[in-house]
Image (tube, rainbow, N blue to C red):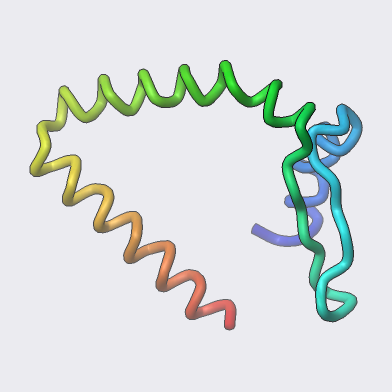
Length: 84
């Protein structure tokens, strides 16, 4: 995701004070943290997400779910390595 898209996506959360941002080690880096207000807003969303994941896991079965999670972990790791 490019920085413009990310900034645009995070703007509503900043506006609602769900996250705060501070500078990182260099001027290109920004660090975001969820605020208590953000945690409260996120709680019902997380419950819904957990239900959706449980439903999907039931449909896929444990083996296919585990394979999916391992694949997502590899994609995440490859993306991190590519960006470093």
